[in-house]
Length: 467
Ligand code: SF4
Image (cartoon, rainbow, N blue to C red; front, side, top):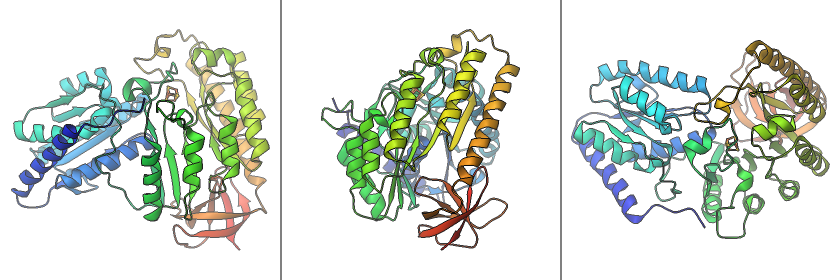
């Protein structure tokens, strides 16, 4: 069954509320500014495109200065505990802006605001937060703002059960070279450490024609890289009542005319199929880059995590990818110190990292998220032990990254210019087809494709010169 769309009346309510806010602002002289503060993943970035478009339609002008704003929307992330604390700290600091603008409307939206514990905290300790809204209710932003504005009351739009796919209300598409295109929302996997299925709900795929149309529009608007987004892109289409999967979608977008690259995040090893790899190999526009989080090299820990694959199965798909796409650039996520993980389990993770040779590895020490199963598991391993494992893995990965980068010296690539490099050495940042960072001397035009030779390497980047 395909995901439900917004009803006509819901769209009409949203548009009527936008108009009401617009009229109210128009009746008050001067400019009215909105500030959108985004935390977390690219999915949140994509949601913020919707928030910005809605703010513009309501009559606000966007600003980067919260002190200037009359509307602040904080689009939050709940994936890590420290991110949550940082958001609450920053929302706390906004009380100063509230003193400047007594009519300021602060909205806390996103994954954090979908958690009942956080809603309770916002209610009690942050009285100047006027609207709290769950992730799946974003299409009601204007209605909630209007309600707060017209009644002066606090609004709690926290029922997260509305899991529609919103195509009908426009987004504020910037004209950047990289376009993040969501293909699905939510997740069905319930990995035991993860909060996402609780805050973003079950998987809902956008219809293929909607995704392809959006990719076409972004390419026509100048995007040079399309990045398809989903918590588990490989299960795209399973909820649609058509016979169409992620490989079909990739092939359809990779067949579009135009000069662009195509990537996707995030893949789940249990759903990453040989067909996916074959599709990547068949279309030159698809980047030879695969981010495939393995999380642990121990089957026992993978089972505890509810990941649905073994280390052997993971390695089988990696080997197939290397066989079909020899130049593929592999990256992954790993968690160190999952509850009950033993030294033996950790060694299996270490061996897997040695065996695969990832380009880079996002390494996290386990941190419990309230509301997940892993948060209730016994965790006898001392924090110092986990830190030692973490340090060993970081050191190993550092060596591997250096070796892989050194091996690129002397090779030539077509690189896509991103823009100025903001690191110490300056110059220009560019990307190889496999998404490796290349630093070039001098200034080059963003969006341009140049042929470069690699002349040097560091742990995190390649150094190149134009040919
Ligand atoms: S696949 Fe697992 S880790 Fe990824 S979002 Fe879903 S539940 Fe979380």
